[in-house]
Every structure is written in structure tokens, then in C-alpha cells.
Image (cartoon, rainbow over all chains, first blue to last red; front, side, top):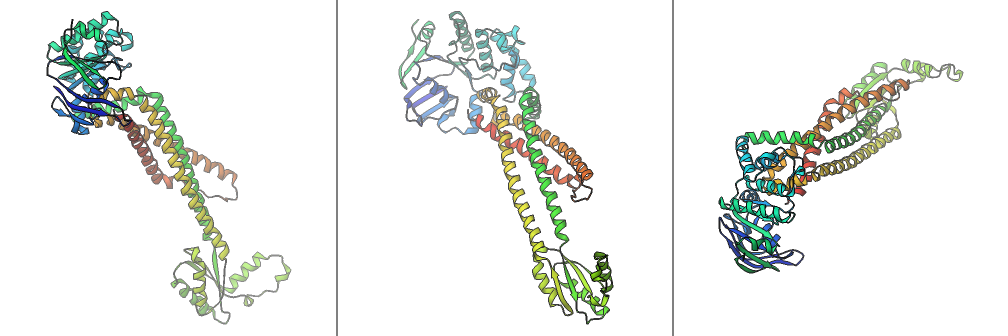
Amino acid sequence: MIEFTDVVKAYDQGNTALNGVNMQIEDGEFCFLIGPSGSGKSTIIKLITGELKPTSGTVHVNGYSLERIRKREIPYLRRTVGVVFQDFRLIEKMTVYENVAFAMRVVGARERDIKERVPYVLELVGLENKANRHPNEMSGGEQQRLAIARALVNNPSMIIADEPTGNLDPERSFEIMALLQEINNLGTTMLVVTHDHKLAQRFHKRTIVIDEGIIVDDGLGEE
Amino acid sequence: MRLNNFGYLLKEGFKGIFTHGFMSFAAVCVTVACLLIVGSFSILAYNLDIMVEELNQTSEILVYVDSELSDAEARSIGTKINTLDNILQSTFISREEALEDFINDHEGDSAFSGVQADDLRHRFVVTLEDNTKMMQTDAQLKQIPGVAKTNAAYELAEGFSTIQSVIHIVSVAVIAILLVVSLLIISNTVKLAMYDRKDEIAIMKMVGATNAFIRLPFQVEGFTLGMVGAALAFGLEWALYDSLVQQVSQVDSLQLFSFVAFQELLMPMMATFAAAGLFVGIVGSWTSIRKFMNV
């Protein structure tokens, strides 16, 4: 669960990115967070992943209080939140399998568990036949599927997808969104962050609109 | 941390050396070059110090015995000399021995042909433990009953002491500067290696790897590269030094230069190189990775 209460985030340079944000996303929800560039979307992601601390107000994510979280607790918070980026952020020298297994290894997973879990996740995202390929041998849509598989492999309770379709054509975008929907149906909370209103409108889901650091709308997106 | 994780981290550390082969090669080369320069200068300074010390040991005080004293009385003064502080050695030279030396030194010089043993005095050649205290010891020697006069070359002893002090100060300063420069160069090389892998580190942080888990492979890598660099530098230093000593001894027929054998320096050199390699590898990778950990 994500819960923001009266959250203000001001940067050292003086600009205020968030100005009294209140929002709550329940476990298992599928939610869009939309807004133009500079509206505060990225700041919200950084607050959720513990990269930033709020200037005032409280942020609760999956049982962690982010305003007073200790540095050594942040890795454990991050294991509950998978993140998918617009630019995929894959390791080019590793194969598809290795990219996903790497995410498990670096959190100390057993080799036996890795061998069980990675093929399952690759099958879930439709990459079971491309396990030995390298990212640069794959299309943008496939690379994003791989990024989703990596975000999913440690079984997080929530996935944040930051502009997941930003680098994809409309057809691939739809496929990725359908995949995220499928993952959500399995019980993972999904927060899709985008500036693309049309994308949110196509999926009749809860949509939070942010502009200039303030939540200006929160309701079901229209189809 | 589970044992299989520890094994994985060690394996990753060693693997990293080969997967980033060029950067590893660069880090080892820089370590070798820097340690070689620092090591060579240290050995040079050490040898120079010993050579000056040996020259300094040749400084001596001649203690002339009162000519009224008998042979036995003259010899007994040696006991009193030896009770003084700062005396390394005192050697009695009789009038007859002194005459023999004198004749040898002035062979063929007719002006000294009439010199007899009785014209000369019994004497002691005294060498000191610390030549910087020559003046005080000379004063004490003059106080001994039966000592007629002394002859001490203060200027020469002071000159050697000054040269030694200069060598100490210059070598400590140069070694310190070289060490700092080496650390900066090596740290920057390791930083470049880390920069090469900043995306990997960012992904590790993103998926929830702990700082210790991220750091350990880099520390293993830094440690290994540092030790490999130190071992290579040590071997090269040994070979170069032995070759230099051999070359100099072939040219230096008068044996003006005396070098300490490398075997004598083996343990301290090995320990110093290993410590430097360890320090450079671990501290270099620690400080370099810190920058990329704040994600």
C-alpha cells in the first residue's frame, strides 16, 4: 500500500516539487499517475523508492515510513517495489536469463530458487524462447518485457512503471499495458506513471492527475 | 550473509577482473609503475644513507698520550677511554707502530728521514657511536689524566651528519609526495573502472541489493588487483635492483659504492609492497564506489 499525507518536497535550490500531496493506493490496485513534465511525477517515484525523503508530511509504502526510514532499511523496502523504466536499463553484456537472474542473485537468492523462478517469470512475459538472447538482439517491446520480468522476479507486492511505453509504437504499447494488467490480475499492485492521457483513457482504471506538485484529479479514467 | 552468497560474491569479484580486462590491466600497470617508482627511490635513499653512515664511521679522534708516561701507563689509559659514553672502539698505537705508519706514509721523503720513535707519542685511535656528539666526547677525553692532546675533525663529522639529515628529509618528503600522487592516480584508475559499471551498480541498488552486497565484489577485485600489482612491482624491483648492482660493480673497480643486497631488504620490502598494494586496492575501490552508492 502507498499512502501520502500532506507531502511537501522542496529541493535545496528552492523549487517545490510537491506541495501538499495526499493519495492512497491500496494493495492490488491498478492506478495511473499522469501529469506533464515537471509536475512532480518523478519526485513521487523517488519518494516511494526511498531515493528522497519528504520535506514534510508522511509517506508509507508497504509498511515502511519513508520520512524516518533508516539507510540500511532502504534495500529491503526496494525489494517490495519493482521498478520499470522507459529506457529499460538492462545490462547489455548479459543474456535475457542472466539479466533476470542477476536481480535475484544480488538480493541473495539461492541458485536453486533462481533456476525455478527465472523460467517462470520469462514465460509470464512471453520471453521463454529468448532466454539466451542479449538485449541488443531484441525489439523495444521485448526489452521492456524483459525489464518487467526483472522487476517481477523478486516477487514484489507492487510495480511502478515509469513511462513504460514511452519508447514503443502503439501496438507494442498496448501489449505492454496488457501484460501489466495481467500481472495486476495476479495480485501485484500496479502504478503506471505517464504523461500520456490517451494511454490512461484506453484502460478504464483509477487515474491520479498531478500538476505543479498538486493532485488535481483522482478518479476512474474514461474509456 | 549465507555461505553460498559469499562464494558468489567472491566469484563475482574475480570474474570482474576478467570481464573488465582493459580497466584491470590499466589499474595493475598504474599500481606497478607507482610502486616501482616509490620502491626504487626508497632503496636508493636507504643505500645512500648507509654509504654516508659508513663514511661517517671513518671519522675518528686521535688521543695523544703524555710522553712522560711509560708504555704500561699509556696502555692503561685505554680502560679509562672505554668507560666514557659514546665510545665505539679505541685502539692503542705505540710510538713504534706510529713511526712505522709515518715512514710508510712519507716513503722517499728525505725531510723526515731522521724521525725517531721517541719523537712521537703513544696514541689511541677512537671511533664514536654517534659522531654528532664528537665535541662533547672530545672534551671528556681531554679530561682524562695522561692525555696530552686530542685531534678531532669536527667539520668532517658535522658535514656527514648534515648530508645524512638532508638525505632523510628529502627522501621522506619525496616518498610521501610519490605515495600521495600514486594513490591519486590509482584511485582515479579504479574510479574509471567503477564508472564503467555505474549502470550495473544502479540496477543492483534499484532491485534492493544491500550496500555490503554491492561493495564486496568490488573490494575483492580491488584487493586482487592491488596484490597482483604489488607482486609484479616487487619482482620487477628485485630484478632491476640486482641488475643495477651488478652493472655498478662491474664499472666501479675502486668500490666507491657499496649496495645492500636485496635479500637483506626482502622482508621489509615485501611487507611494504603488500601493504601498499592492499591499501591502494581496498581504499581505492572503497572511495571510488562510494560515489556511485548514493542512488
